[in-house]
Image 1 (cartoon, one colour):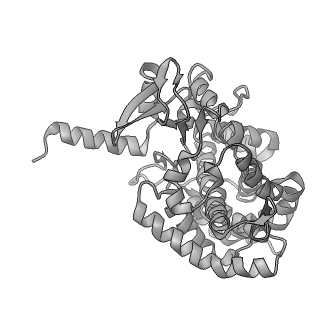
Image 2 (cartoon, rainbow, N blue to C red; image 1 turned 90 degrees about the horizontal axis):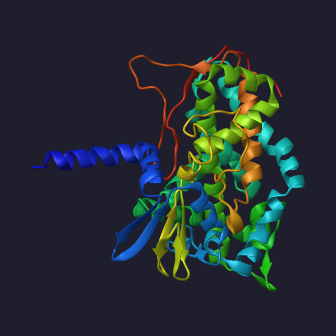
Image 3 (cartoon, rainbow, N blue to C red; image 1 turned 120 degrees about the horizontal axis):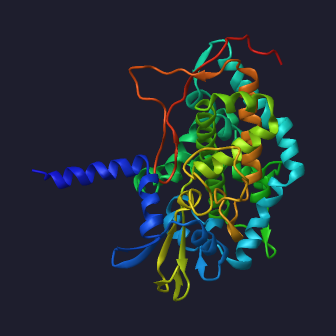
Length: 399
């Protein structure tokens, strides 16, 4: 029979998995660098903005190689785990796909048409679930188009990407999704090796490092990383921004009319409730963080989402306030591993949210008094599970 203390502990853990912010707030005040023992090995959790940023900037002392241990079993060889010149070489392989000229092309050829088609499908109904009908479909269709896989299979990629991201917590699901994605991609990759096209798979499949083609482990590692990174993170973040706007009617109305304000709202959402809450590093030498000794080989969990609500940096940091003075945040990381796709993510959010607000008149939350209100939930990845809305029905636009 469980004791009251066991029940209380289980309840606290459930609350933590749904909303870690109260605990992170407490840790910033009382124990900003927290030491743990895991499998006989020291690990540290870092909660304040200044400390998180300092670790991210110092890639020589704090290596990203630990990501091969955590994500390698599900993604394969990943750029997230590389340091130094090796990281630079591999990053350069895909960076051209995200340069300004390419993003301009993607906006007109892929991003805008994708969101328009999704809005067309819901516009006549006058109601929908923005998560089911928009946010869970839009980013994955965009990244599928950029990579060069059939967009009509986006539902498969959404499921695989979600399971791969959750691999460290659910290893069997992650491994199954990893194998399924590779089996699906193999004939496409082999075709691009022989017949390159103007897509990212072709770039990766035919790329060379030091005069040699990438091996298959690196090719599939890139693709397993890009799909979750390009789809899952933006999908949750888009939901967070919609919920913030829908919960602040004055801001919602202003965002419909003022593109500059919409951009501020997106940036504030990135700070206030980003979709990926933490990153890993490992100490390459004996060092310290905020005076706390950290031994060589120790793992370090950087709570970037906690850092983004650091009260010493932002007034009323827990509040969503698009009017606040702009300061850089940690939503896309910092330093050498600053997110390669951050400009694509901002573009997708601007175009996607702006199109929904412009086309769906009188958009508002459709709250059921008998059901819980929509909320942002999750520990490592955060976003709303549903966003029921109503709006004025309108016939789909002919294109």
